[in-house]
Structures are given as structure tokens and as C-alpha cells.
Image 1 (cartoon, rainbow, N blue to C red):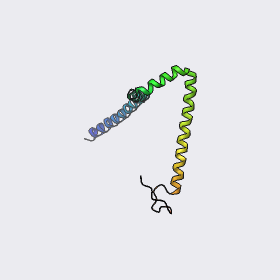
Image 2 (tube, rainbow, N blue to C red):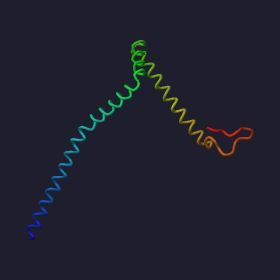
Image 3 (tube, rainbow, N blue to C red):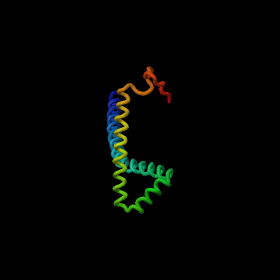
Length: 117
């Protein structure tokens, strides 16, 4: 009986080690596929966005053709910089509003009706 119990324990140890090796192998295989799957998901999202807004992308292509690629890139960079500046200013104004106590306070200023939104 003791010999049989030792055999079962040894077999269990072998199986646990084998399962650990197989988990590691699966982890390596999944890791190799993760990046291409992530890229495919991103491309799928871009395709859905573009197919839902064909005029936007048609306009972008027309702008590149009309303005020439170098000008289109320059305008794109200007628009991107403007968008980032807008986002920063919006965040700063939100912080200023939060510091003031936010909108619609309970005590209206003298002579002004309370704001309703």
C-alpha cells in the first residue's frame, strides 16, 4: 500500500511538472500571436469608423489630391497641434471652474437669476 501511494505521488509530481511546461508553451504561443491580433483589431476598428463616415474620408482623399501631399501633411500637423491646444485649454478651464466651485452654485450672485441648464 505504501509503495502504491509513493507511485501515485511520483506520478502526480510528473503530471504537475508537465502541466507547468505546457502552460509555459501555450503562453509563448499566445504571446507570439497577441501583437498581430491586436493590429488586426485596430485595423478592424479603423475600417468600421471609415465605412460609417465615407464623406469624411472622401474629403480627406480629395484634400490630399487637391493640396498635394506635402501641403496636406503640413495642414494635418497644424490641425493636430490646434486640437491638442484646444484640449489643453479645455482641461485648464475645467480645473479653474472646479476651483471656483463649479457651475450652478446654491447662492446666486446679487441681481442675477440662478443659471439653469
